[in-house]
Image (cartoon, rainbow, N blue to C red; front, top):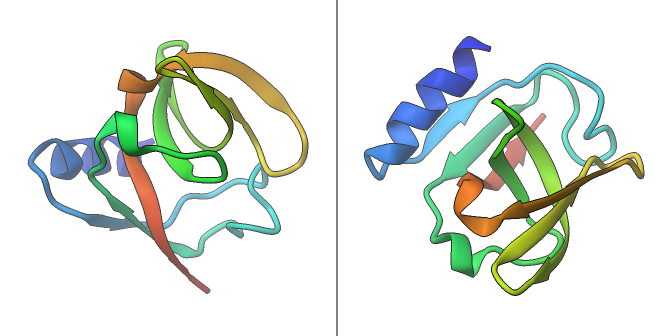
Length: 100
């Protein structure tokens, strides 16, 4: 996932970045290949229904926040799958725009 590494670098330096993720897990919210703008975010500012780039089991996911409690986030895709709970500090960036 070359776009993930590029995005992580830009976000870590405090800059927004545009990427074109490919996949179907966020269908209906982000279509495969759409232009997505990610921005740096304070993990404690992430809210339910945000789409975030998050570290997950040795990789990264662009997924939806389903619940937030006590500094932890429940993440899942837009098709109803729940991945599980992760510490909010695993969030790398938040989606701020999606263009077709």
